[in-house]
Image (cartoon, rainbow, N blue to C red; front, side, top):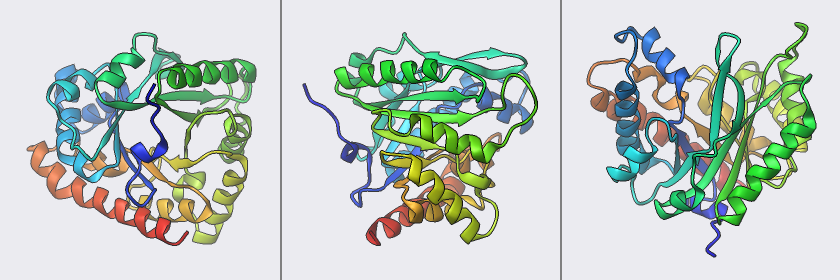
Length: 291
């Protein structure tokens, strides 16, 4: 069986410059906040995601899509540039306690063989990490996910995202990111997608030190995501994280969030989002060249 390697989702430099459009209810909330008609119809999300895939994929080494809104449409419309690999989210979000994603399970409706036939190279799993939830359960889920990917020749990308504990109100986000990496950073996945320490804020030396602490816990290639980071700070975050040992980014909001809800989305994606993604790709290549 043909097994994909990380080379299949990187730039020629060996760095990752990957775009995420797999946001689900979070994206609907973004459209609502931008003043779109309420309630925001599914088709609005699908159209935006497919447009983003068509316009931005020539500048990304891979793009992460979701089954709920855009995977089928992206495949049917042949929306991706030849140079851009497809990653499919294999996480099912379970809402609860007033939030769109309160817990996550492996999405059994994602067919890895069909993903492969449709040109997909990898699956991605969001793992919510809370200090007061069962670590063994998380580890087992990740093992099952890795096996699902690897027995089907696909790459396995995990995305541990930290959340406050269910009980009590003490939450040290920075320590939680490190603890999650200590728990899951050597779990046999191919790539670790992680939240940027300090939300990308602070001085460069502070950010570098925090990123190096994180790097020490992760025993596989890793990339940063952009949720929770001011998009103006994201290019610096990529550069600092890569100085500490990261290999690039898998990000959506830093590239396209500022055009959500604007008229003439296609033009705005071209004029605003393409240059952002191009610049981020250049940073990745520059940092890889220094290695």
